[in-house]
Structures are given as C-alpha cells and as structure tokens.
Image (cartoon, rainbow, N blue to C red; front, side, top):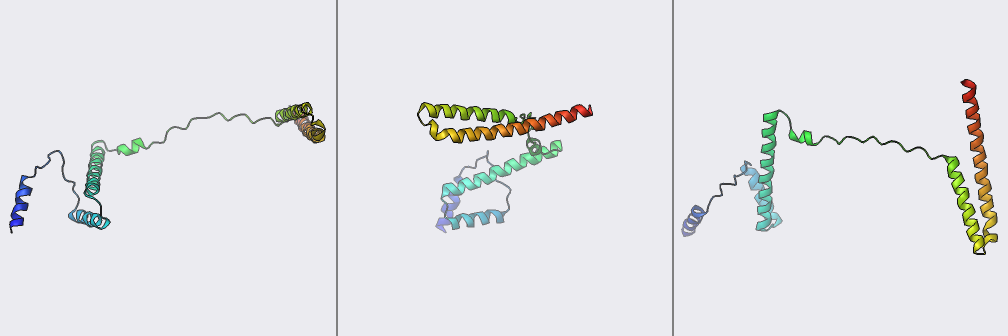
Length: 156
C-alpha cells in the first residue's frame, strides 16, 4: 500500500512534455512491443529509441495523409518520378579495317623493338605470319566493300 502511494506521488510530480504527443497505436500493439523488448533484453535506451522511431513514423504518415486530403495527390508519388533518360549518341562502330591497320603497326613496332634488343630472329617469323594474316583480312574487307559499292552504284 505504501509503495502504491509513493508511485502515485512520483507519477503526479512527473512533468508532461507538451511538445510530444502519444502515438495513436492500439494498446495491443504497445503491449506486444513491450513483450518483444523484454524478450530481446533491450536496454532502456534501445527501447526508448524504438518507441521514438515509431512515433516519428506515425507523424510522417499523418503529414502524408493530410497532404493527400488537402491536394488529392500523394507527395511521395511526385518524388518517385524517374529521372529523365539522357539521350546518348551511340558511339560510331569502330571500323575493322582501321583496327587492322593499327594492329599491323603495333606488330611492326614490336618486331623493331625486339630486333633492337637482339631477339629479332626469335619473333620475326611469328610477327610476319600475324601481319600476313591481318593483310588477308584487310583484303577480304576491301573486296566486300567494293562489291557493296558496285551494287549501290548499279541500283542508283
């Protein structure tokens, strides 16, 4: 009985914070939260943080609903619009013929560097075979382009 009187005296003397309003959760929800917090053995600070977060979320939801009733639109919908897609000019396709010219030039430079180091004999056969292969591919491309040009001129 004495402990109950002390409890009443303490709660009566506790100031009520006017700036913070209680969230309108059902008593069952709060009871469930309290049970869960006790079972998870959260500290008082952690429990208070969870309760504050719930209150803030409720206030945010209230503001959102007020905006919907006032404007008829959800402000979240306006925020979620996808940014406009920037039109990117597709890079022109690299010309295989030009690539082959560069590759041949690189192989010639490599061969001259190896000859300067005295190892030209070791690489000369391999490099010349690769260059020959690239030249044949260039001839095929040239032949195809000539045929396409001839067809285009014949139809025009």
